[in-house]
Image (cartoon, rainbow, N blue to C red):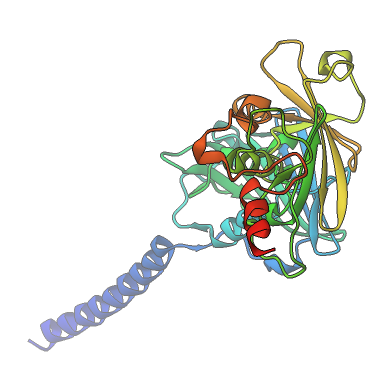
Length: 335
């Protein structure tokens, strides 16, 4: 009987130890399942981002608190900030594979990867990430430089493209439309007088000389100003003028004045007939516009749209001296 009690006591101790071990292991597995930070870095410390993908190499550099491409062209600040936020939030849990052969199979090896990313502060490396094959919707197989196992993380290779076009600031030519005071093209000169504290673009447009029997369409003038103010580029075409840009015989030339400066726009139609190239007087580069928006912009600068035939409803539009007929009548009545 005493012998049996001893055996039961030993079994009870072993059972207790086993339960404790399983509970501890379960807690660790649960911790891994919940996820850990994949990359440990402070977003405010990053001043260099290196991206590599196939034959493409790209470097983004932070200068004077502004992100730029290696050649100094402004980068899309919001897009860079979103990337850093995304990277800082990535998590991993249980490994998909742990063998050295798996690194190449999942395309996360140091010499065989889909995408490679490095974050730096000066010469100090803050984080390195290899992106490999897809692991489902918006998921990729990943590995950091310190890891030898393959994990999955919520990021796709499309989110870290290594080509220049994806990181260029597409709004580099944009202006505040309420600051535009005049624009002229093909002998047409349209202007408006803005008060010093103007915060809107509702001041009426006036024309120096109206074609006989026409009136200035205020909405059409607004559309022209907005098209220039909100101009969005597709990509930088380069700094050298090429014959196919069509600059020798421009499709449109516009001279614009705004509070704080002046700018001349020269639009050329590409040899293929679909794409539009623009050169502005205050930048060295030639810019390619998206096909649809480029064509739409040229359509806005149509004299027939700006100066439709005068009707009874447009008798109050501007006269040749830039003063409305209606205003003249009112002034005469007061005198």
